[in-house]
Length: 155
Picture 1: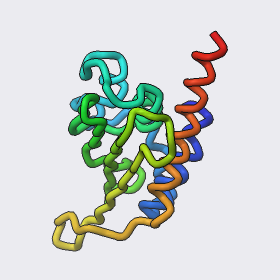
Picture 2: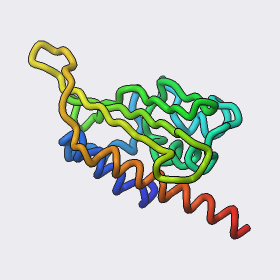
Picture 3: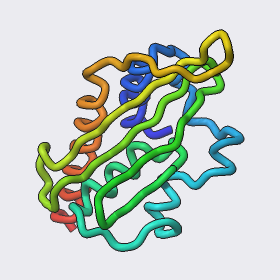
Picture 4: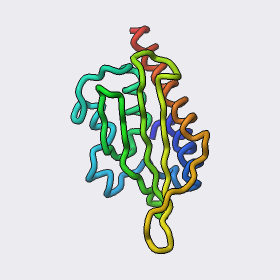
């Protein structure tokens, strides 16, 4: 796992309340069945983007361990499917990433994180998420987008 993603995984662990989320870099049966964000990044699941390409690529890289439900590079929307960490099977989470502009700015990006816990009856019930989690993920994406942009400028 890339070192820059360790902090993101810690952030998601705070969102879910699961210390075991740090192990989410491994493969799971769900990941094998579903497309991943890496599939969209590699071109197997996406077309050319009309949103900021650095934000798009950074979003895909940052959340590439999550299964994809939907990704629309024209609208700038990435919706992950529910992810259940094998270390914490009683909870699951998903994220929505909205790229709102073609400029590389903080207000051009919004991330929403959703969490559910399994009830005693076996149903999934919405649970609270640390309010700072979405902002922390946005910051990780923005940092990576800036790195990608600087790499292009340096070339």
